[in-house]
Image (cartoon, rainbow, N blue to C red; front, side, top):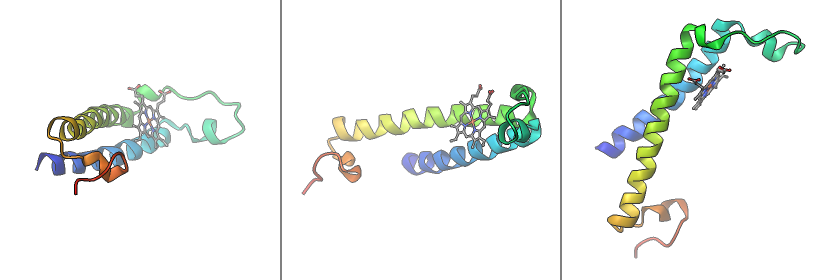
Length: 94
Ligand code: HEM
């Protein structure tokens, strides 16, 4: 159940990071400096409302990624379940 919860949260935080990143650019009015002639200065992103969501989503994603990698290593090295074979590392159990 923990594995499924983390997997769902991983996907949610990736989409939240992408969506709030795009929203931050639009709310801050950065599309012209980014995609225009290149002569306009970028706005201060930290004052845009979407930025705190983006920053939080990125932090959650980082923590979940560490937990996800740690859990995979625990199953591989401690529980000897050869889960890394599913991504092509080592041979699967017979
Ligand atoms: C999985 C996807 C993404 C992750 C993990 C991610 C992560 C981050 C992180 C860690 C920061 C710095 C946050 C802080 O300073 O507190 C940041 C800043 C930012 N991100 Fe993302 N990001 C993602 C996708 C996107 C996308 C798709 C866009 C827009 C198309 C975007 C736009 C921005 C902007 C505008 C900033 C502010 C840059 C600045 O302050 O100079 N991000 N992102």
